[in-house]
Length: 383
Image (tube, rainbow, N blue to C red; front, top):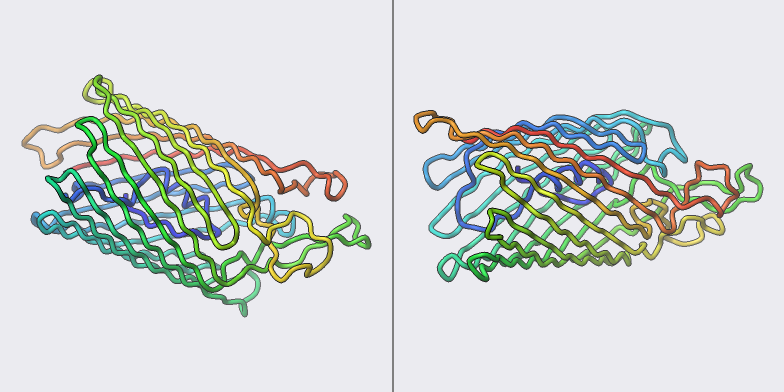
């Protein structure tokens, strides 16, 4: 399943997709014809998100492939920083995308269009990608560009309407180093402009006249943000039908956030039917320049944030995937099918975001932490 990820406040759904799929194309070949049906679930941090997804891909001749995807999030609950100022809620997000791939000699081009809708948020994006093989197909260069527009509303306030524009540039290089090893380099630039924060989130500031010792006011973010990310990946094939892979990624933006991501994984086949993958991921980031858990007074600075995703935090994820593949007879129009189960457990630790839902004195509340479980069960049919 091909997904273009644009960062916004709906990050758990994006996390589900990024763990299940990849949007990078590393060779000038058309994707396989297939149909996927998936059920996904995210449970953690007071949030419950689940729903189905359907993908259909069909080739037209030997040069064109078309795809369509339908994805649903059913969301209930609320994260801790929302619960501090509001009540639990339920909503549904639906996403539809269509795309076409065109293969010409050793060049593969892709064009896709995606819409996402919920009761207070509308997003549309278009994405273009190109990959080219060189030097006897040992080197692949990939380029990509995406542009998106968001419309942000607010439940209970029909007069609230804000907009944001997002642009994404991607560059990748994949090189076959030896018969057993592939190395990849990638760079990504994202430029955002417009309304970039969440209308439901608030910052807190000291107020001796309040029963809790503090009060809340609306967050205020800059209306521009530029981020850059670079990554190096390596895949090594082991002699006993297994492989290992690793990735290191660095990120920085104009809001002062610096982050690092490290991934490692091991894939092993058993017989002709079973594939098992074990993986781990570590992520760490520094806080935004304008983030504080507790301000000294109202409107202390021009820009203010208390979204925990803007704070200093880290997370560790451990994952397991099991796939069973079976083939049909050569005369059957169905080539093969697979049943796949993915499970990831993620532990989040925040260094400067406090749990205000406790009874501790203001400013002395314990730092927040939580765990999340992400499950994906999907069936793929290749034809």
